[in-house]
Image (cartoon, each protein chain N blue to C red):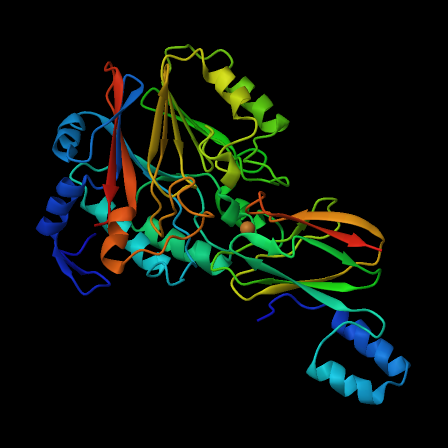
Length: 317
Length: 120
Ligand SMILES: [Cu+2]
């Protein structure tokens, strides 16, 4: 349930109507419409079209990098901004079928952080599918805290797959046991599982792959890529429509390569610099009045029989 | 703030007591440094970089890794001999190097961050 009014940290009171208008104006998240398997990104000003496309379509939402526990000067608390993002989800005109979270749920893998995230995200009443980010595996047992909560029915470090409305979803883990100097890594065991998961599936099955670190090389100098992603993408190449959704870099980047569409989502907690635009990655300090325009969510619509997924990115501004 | 239990302290106290270093003990309590004969060197994490990146110490010396970034980091030995917990801002991790050799280490969250320690 959402309130008709909400007060932001800056003391600005948003009415429900105002929030929706802002959503339309800013194009509030990534709204993914899965239509026939190929995702389509509706531009920032196309939220109205997204709502139209969503009629009769299956819509799901991506949230990412909530970093609960992060409370440095670069951000208001991550709890506050996740709560704002989730309020946006509750206000969506078309209720998403489910959500995916592409990792870095927490900042320090602490039990209280996982609990806060589960309480806030759970308030939507939506089913949520997770993959971990590297920040979710830094408890003393290196991942037990995450797997205790989200490991049920998954394999290895938490990879899994499921089907919804004819779309096959695959959650991959590329943040486990990272090696010196390296990028994200899937590992032989997970790649073997992926191969068997895809074996025998008709090439017409639309595929959505989600993982924390991008599966395409964005900026290896900052570790923004996955070492053995090429092996996974080779297994996916025969499918007519593959959509790859990632987080980690806290900004939107898109690439289309043949039948594959790659997309990264914004964080709900703090922005990071564009690749190479700063000395190092990490929380970007921005004026408070600009912060929310750099945070957000992603929504995807899927319509059976159509050719494209529709993707809408939404900011918290 | 050091959230990592500094495992060297109890042993150090025992050793100091065994050796009857009563006056030194007070100094040790006030300034937790490595045992007599050994030294503690600090490696500071700043702007996603270990400083100094390369370090030479003697066998039995201790290194204190201090995170002064506003981002969490971890310290992981390339050979798996040690792994810190999550080091948030101002947290530190202390490790005593008892074997000679070269130890490469990196940040488990940002593996492009690398450093090395030569233990003589
Ligand atoms: Cu790091």
